[in-house]
Length: 338
Image (tube, rainbow, N blue to C red; front, top):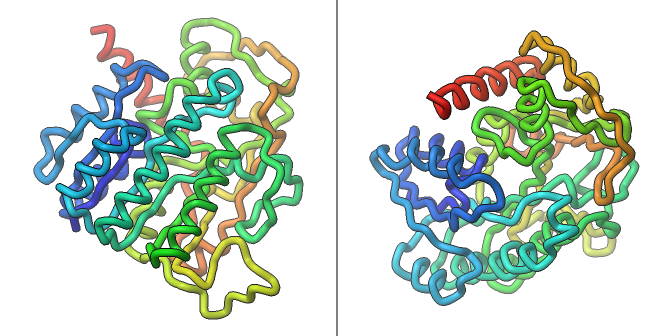
């Protein structure tokens, strides 16, 4: 297939592009290479992709409507994996317009590109952040969601609603994937685990919010990638059992689906830090702080639906995943400073 991967210089985008290329798909990647975090890391990810046969890259901002229209019309994609977005919960508190531009306007441009050019399936990144202040655990795709606690989470929920409208109006198959705290090699430098490893190695204190009494459903990048590719291969279809009197938010009478992708094993932040300490052979200096605005105490994914419909459930043990990340981090920064 010919697949568009938006955000291909990002953490998840690079891994997805690699897996699609490895199985023989043609991949066209786009990214605006912004400076939300160090562009050198994005360049290094791209450097892994660009020598591979079947891969092409174009620098492009998804919020640029005329450029996106011309790009889609020229390329004729079979399927689209949309991962480009303005990420980060805390950043959205200070920079709301960046989220409106990328996550709302940019998403409409992707939807329109798919509609106008007969794309067979759009798979897009949603987030566990859409569960907001929900406290019923584990989080299920069938749960009602009406109380986001960050603008980032609100934009991701808006994406799901926008996708449904296109599935209903135009018959465009769309599948949204709610990712739960993705970690692993080539990860984002603004994520807590990346900051923890860097600070511990440098002997600096690490900020631990809510005094460490937080739980996250940490999900290894290989599991996320596998889930995305498997879902891409199964275009969303109408749910023949959908009951409009008791509507299930995760499916529809239209070709529309939502899935959680999480490790379904929440871990306390202090335990997570302890595993990092053991791998590094070095103790962390903890700076215990109160809860930050926009954060939630716990995330916990139900993956029953993913298992039932896609026959997949993330299962990489946390120790294995952290070891892989720490080892990559040490190698990458040793290469950087060489």
